[in-house]
Length: 74
Image (tube, rainbow, N blue to C red; front, side, top):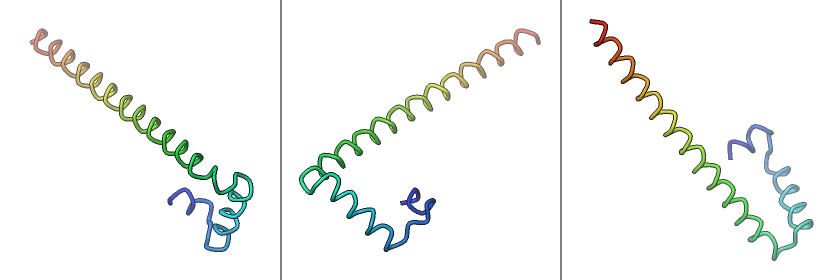
């Protein structure tokens, strides 16, 4: 919904876009299209969370190494 707000789509514009999609893809193809969009979003979110967890893990490892260096220097 935020994406629609970024482009300032209001009621009439959303209706026009909906009918354009309906005309382009037909009523039977829309569920398949939405399924594909949902899959893509799910894969994107999975990849994003994987990258986030790897970055956090890397940061923790780096902090541990820095703590070891500091304790070895003392």
